[in-house]
Amino acid sequence: MTDVSEFDDIPGTTLFTAQRSRKGYWLNQFCMSLMRAENRERFKADERAYLDEWPMTEAQKQAVLARDYNACIAEGGNIYFLAKIFATDGKSYQYAAGTMTGMTQEEYAEMMLRGGRSIEGARSIKEGR
Image 1 (tube, one colour):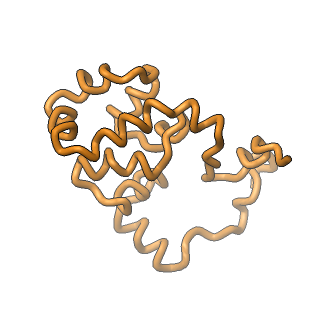
Image 2 (cartoon, one colour):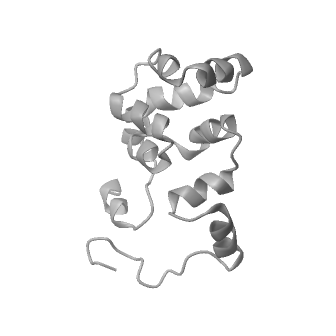
């Protein structure tokens, strides 16, 4: 069996493991609740109050409030569930991916049209590459 911690050394990549799934269970359930229009409206009306209805950690709630999708992923969020948040905000997947990479939506789109990020120098965190 593969030790999934070895995947934590890949720069810019977070493998969604069973452990991360358990950690983010309530965060992801909150995200799925946004599939219903009435829940999106309640969330937009008072985000903190709606989040407080969910047994999420404070770190998870703060990540959502800040729209820090990288922090949400670190807290067990799955990008496909997190998409419900940026869709609720009227933002595209491309916009969210741009913010997660420190780019504007336009810069991110251009990078992807050029073939994505170069793999050169991006092989290992611990090796500084």
